[in-house]
Image (cartoon, rainbow, N blue to C red):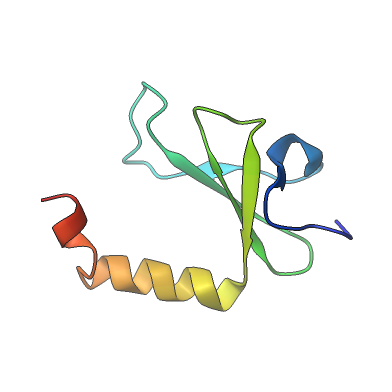
Length: 78
């Protein structure tokens, strides 16, 4: 995975396993994440699986998930 960068085509990330939330629906309305060998996390839009991947550090994803669990983003879906 050497050379991963934000905006690279998600299809270029070979050998990763994309995972989506159990809350995702069958219409493809979900965000998928994949752990990269260097510890970073890739994120892609399931509607455009070959589109760009955003690459985050594990710490950034932990902050996002914990913030979501705490309700920090509830105002965005109200």
